[in-house]
Length: 388
Image 1: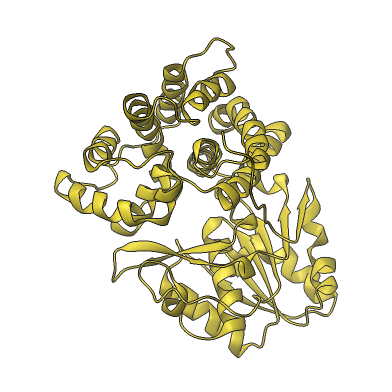
Image 2: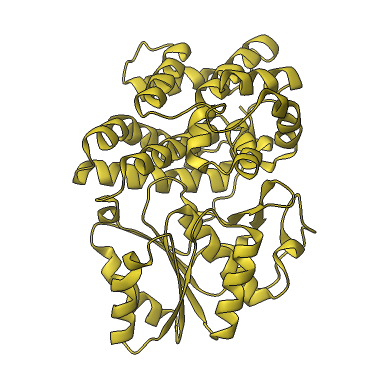
């Protein structure tokens, strides 16, 4: 392994613990907020206690609801609301869609311009020059880790892909993670989100940008996910499961933001634009095959690669068995995905005729840069076919 050389960046503050949602009004006041844009998910009622508490402190708010995964148009509409209402602070409360929308809105409201001025891949890729409006990011699901990442994923119906608005200036001022918000999460949301979080712990661990800080977080997060995700989905999340899943998601966000991802997310980005399926479910459908193809490719073409022994370590961490082989870890992942009733890509709407175009789009995705090695078109095609 080469000498360690890395950067680690995250939200200005990370607050974790049950009941911490009640601290939001004082946090807004501490940021100097005079008027808040409250960005919510599908159910705005979940943010009503925050809105009412802000009002009691004399801090008015405007609301913007994100009904599905955010698009370029979502960012435009939310920014228009923020600018028209003269909001100086953003509180985003919801799943990854609400948090990504909140980050995009906070950035665009401060910098001006159109999302396509700044988007990677499908936009002009210009750099943001001004810090985003102060943002408090509050996840109500355990999956994306978006509360501690420096990008917002936006879909484009015209381009048929998802792309990132990305800048260190987009990191939230506060990431507030309250595990109690997972108490009534539906089983399918816990399953898709939990498997997304698991993939965001595994991919950085074998990434070409893996580093000591993210390694430590990934190891801890994988063990927490392994012991609690299945139980939470199949039997409901008790306090210990909520804590484990919330921490796994938080650690996954910290890992991906600082060590990158890989082929799972390289495919999930274009698939989200093509199929409209939930991001976490796509990642779950791809995870087992991605591990399998990468392991075979490393053994065949790069047997001295430093990522290769990590596949066995993954197996030990996930199965809890000290003698587990790399193949045992992959089997464990596939069994979990099946137990949590995640469909294959074909059932989500992918046809065989779509595969060549999908492979071309995935190869261009920024997440592919973190994959342990560059996969051939044949390997990428095999990966998709195994995930069908």
